[in-house]
Image (cartoon, rainbow, N blue to C red; front, side, top):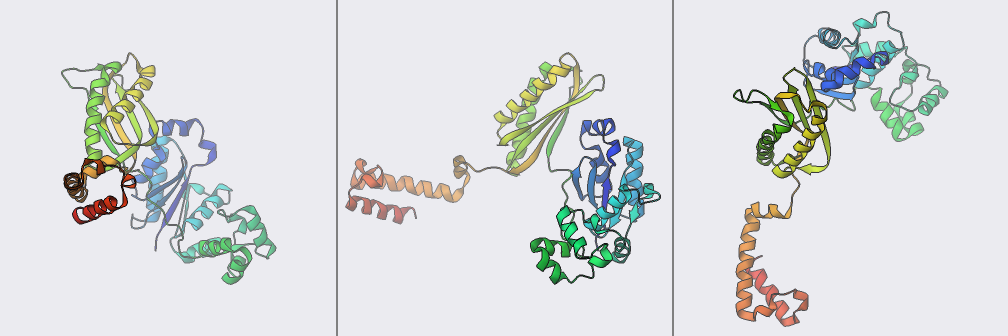
Length: 351
């Protein structure tokens, strides 16, 4: 059986504090990833975690809340249950002030515990469904989950159609939508330090270093047959200040020239804030990775395609010798006997 942890930061804290937290990138998510590799962010202040086999559930939840408090000065609400639906229902229950001490969270380690918890809750806790569906459930006489479970699944499917089938699965023990590992996203990155003999660089003089970085990253993309659509450049000044700029591209890229151009563009954006500040460290990250798009040039890397091209070249030479150079033109322009003869030669030599 899986265990799902739902973490939510109450909205009252999502002002200045969360803006500071996310200044260097998903602070809340980073803390969660220290406890499990399966982290599915929903928003800056809401995360799903699969904590199956990650230790005692209460200890994991307590550890996350402690790190949020000490590192980010945020108070998080945690709920643990066998399914996403039950875990979030428990979080909503805490958010609405039903818990005497929500700093301890809710732990429903088994489906039996989850059923006991859900049974008295109103069906208004059906969070994935629109209000009209909840209202129709209430019209059927369902005031709470205990009464909802008494309705045969066939009746729910007949009443709501596909939504009814989804409803039957969600309120059941089987997880319909398992937690997905969406953070951290796959990326390729490099961190560079200004050589000791140089000591510090003014930001405008960073061009050479970024050109070198673009070459190394382009080679790694080629080795892995990948392209990227999101580029991030960060720099640290001699005063310890860290600034970063990112750019989402309209299409995936992998060429050294394109990477260089985008990095220099990001450098110019950073220069507006750090134009005279010496740089001692800079970092480049390539994100939103995907298989490299194929082009016509990729045909030359295909051995079978190379063999067919060699055969085609020989065939064209043979055709020219036998039928004359005038036949090397669109087949539709040839007389029918010559066209059929040429196609026969190509078939024999190439195909």
